[in-house]
Image (tube, rainbow, N blue to C red):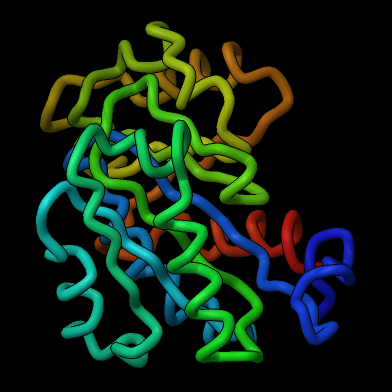
Length: 215
């Protein structure tokens, strides 16, 4: 595969650098579950993959992925933010950049690195020094007013994922209205509904991402 803009200049030895994609969103929105659902889909599409997770003072998400059996545990790195989650993906992404660089050295053929942010609020965004493209995950149980709040994460991400669509009738959310309002505030940028636990919408997320950064 050819990476974003061919990424021809990446790598000290002339190899193409891996595409880097951020996955952010509030606590409990389903970021890790989405990654777990994406891994087998990406493997089916022949993508050489690695993951960097972020937590405040633990490595819980990384250990969850390593135990999952979905990916070689050595291909999962952990960053402990030690502060606000957005600090290490936006203000000073040095730790994440270094983690991605280390994975590229250890796995020279890696084509795509997913960076999972620690759970953060609707103002969370990714520095483009860290990622080429990023996804923001919100969930239906968080309330159908999230799009109307016009948080920077919702507005600026390359792809907005509305997860846990199956919960809408159980939490009193008018899902069609939520989707309509999300599309209205985002203009032409895509919105995809998912149920990451059951795999609904995950292939569409994978294909949208791959079209943007790898094909």
